[in-house]
Amino acid sequence: MKEGEQETAQKIEPEKNQKKEQGKYEDILYLPRPVSGRHPQMPLQDRAAQFAPFAALTGHDEAVRETARLTDSYIELEEGQRERLDQRLSLLIQALRENPGQEPVITVTYFKPDEKKDGGAYVPVWGSVKKVDGYRREIVLKDGTSLPMDDIIAMEGDVFDGAED
Image (cartoon, helix red, strand yellow):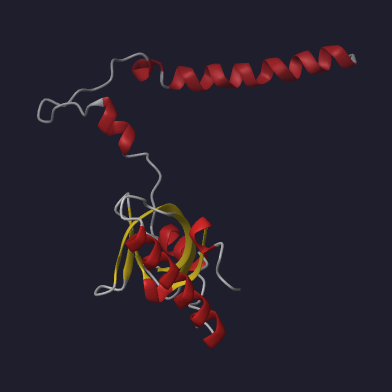
């Protein structure tokens, strides 16, 4: 046999074997699929759901992401930094008293504690000051945001332009 004929013979042999196998099951090969008289047929949606991916450790991915998420530590301000903030806070209160209709625009950076783990983030907030609540020790912005005075590390704005640094 030549090379091309040999390849053709090799291709034909599996087809013969396949036909022999089919001949073995010829009596049941083309029968309709059996349907139970007792149980209703499962809907396609439910049949597909049984092959859905399985998560053996439910919530594990979320726990890993939460552990990997970084938070900042709370910074205790030095005495000089605390005095500077107190001076700026006094200027802000003075500006609100002297000009009751005006709402000075400031940028405040404060520590926002994390809800899920130790630490938090230093968040800058920009807005118009509505009032300074000395009793609750917070600065309230026009949009309703309350900023705790004890967590503020920086305040900037035009109202502080005359302040010594």
